[in-house]
Length: 461
Length: 173
Image (tube, each protein chain N blue to C red):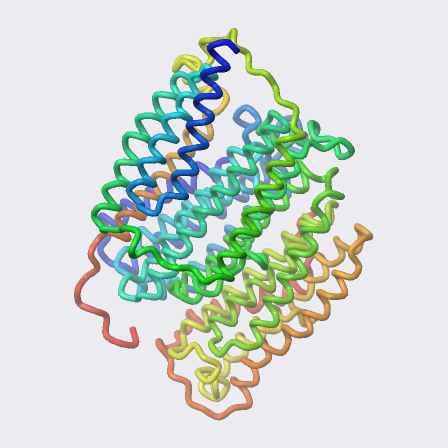
């Protein structure tokens, strides 16, 4: 609650900072301090959340605060702070509106907080829009690059179209249940005598969310947008923002459509299988590491969809640990990527000889994304698959996912092979300072910490 | 058939007919004009449902402002039927099939839905007084928080629209 107000104020402060402060490095420093303050506000919120459910409704049932929502907010704000510390120097290089970029990131966090606590369809819609519109802008922020403009326009057009589909779904659902309140919708819809309007509405909403999280038949925009956007912003879009969309997806389907799961599980299971297949198989054929990461983010979305499929309380653990592990590792890997000039696999050749520490940290992040034990990625995959196994059905999908995880090892390890076993002299775009090394080390430690002690990141959920 | 029903069927026929006109006419300017008519007839439906404020807002904002903007854009870009891109046969077929399936789903949903008759007695439900009360009591949070959305859109307009420094950064930076 306090965090929503704080992040909006911080966004406005950043806008004024752009006016008053001319030194871009100071702007980054101010933004980083504000992110740290925001993390503090989130922790304050977390400790103030009462266990009594009746006290947790705010603004005429618009928001409902739960322990796991606040914990998700805290973790994602932490990831944003990590992102600012790792990528701050790179954001300066994107364009001249550095303060505005940070203001937009603060507003994105406002949307994230709404999406993790909404109790009303209207709040969900506004949250998704607050999350999306700054993304369109950040994607097109590198105006000297034609690909960046293309990414922005493509994302904007497709995103607006999907917003229409989402609104149509909400309308149909309102027609069937006569309520925007997600708790009331749950009590109004009866699984045995389900109004076909509601069913059509659920389908529309599912398609719209599948687009936002880049699930398979709606994934076409992802490679172009992630590849074309400036790399620092791709890192943010493919991690924290995707996690927020997933959390909203899970929240709606868990709270409102839990009892109706017989009607939509099969469709979502097919979407999940298609996402895993398309993401992993296409990633194998990519020549650019940045584009490979775009496809890998589709593949990882397939795993996160498992949390939505499992309509039980383990799903919350799964999505939170997956969001944290995936975000930390991907942000880390992107911060290695921006240090290099050439984003193809060949550009990584011989990195281990030139920058052993950089190559080592990149390997840890890749291990985590591939899901090797002792890293965060392994525990994340374990928890989401556990949630589906607990649910009992869909064992075929779990086995299929394990097979796909094995394929993913191939393309992640190609980068490691290029770094350690191929000769070459990679060109760096900037020198590695001690501060960079320290931050990369901390990120590595976090990845391993999630893998060794995941309970720390679940915080009693 | 009383006056209400007559008006309803008339407006419905105009809406559907004009909506078909939007997608069937080859000339984009005609499409936009049909869209204007569609919006006007939908505004008429709002009147029938006692939503007077919604009627006037829809008329001013959509028909008056947005559609005129559309028209200007089409005229400025000089679009006409000749420059319309031709789609391949397969794409057309895929479009027809998926559109038809969607139509079928919606038709089935609407057919079995039980309609709720609107309360014709509450004539002041759509007045701005009631709307304001609802907006500032029940829906105050979405109303206020949408300002964040508009603020980020405004920042976007500035970031995208402002001219970048003409001196390009030295390569490698």
